[in-house]
Image (cartoon, rainbow, N blue to C red; front, side, top):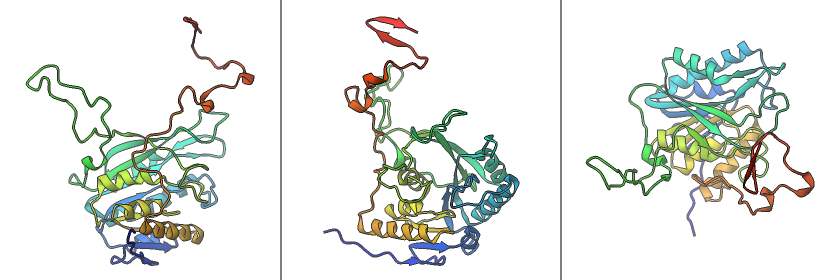
Length: 315
């Protein structure tokens, strides 16, 4: 039997606690955290599109709100710490798109932060648009406070595409050319988003997949470090932190979401949290799987593409 240790969740920030969940405005939490005490601030803020957990503001007012959050987040960062801001698009009421990472970048540069990567989080499913191409990616802006920062690349390496490849010339000819620990995962991450049939799905409409945060936690922090999510929602970032023996703090305006977050944290402690394993390959149906076959009653696909039929190429 696995021995579990109950987790005491502080309701105000307490640097001695493993987890702090604050019910209230994100600035109330951030201002209670000591300067330079946090290794990683990671979050996905509201996109100002009128979700039920946010109030739609004038875009300039929204950006001022984000600036306050980012300023306090930068204050609590350790000198070798990182800030990861995961954003998508603000969609105006007339349908115009505003890429939030462009605006967030400007704010963070004014705060003296340095951009290390613009990570593209790619997911292949979601709502289908009618008047524009369907959105299938969002971005994570990874900033550091200085040029000396925690980066554990080996902790997030992925399997090599060609593990048997060898050098064909030079002093290493005949030797394997790949890193035996795996390859750098790059800056495009294909990770399923949390939709209705996702194992982690809760009532939250825009939920972090835990494995997305796990990569950031493993790469940018060490065991025992503090990870802060100012818009913690149902606690995915806190769960990712605890799974890997870090401390966590977060805030939200919704008591309902924080209750779910607390329940999920307790499941982490018991080792029973439903979650998609880190590194699991995205499911790809085989050609003989029924779900991948076009039903005969729908006829031939009428989209503009090229098909091969009996050895002949047709447009």
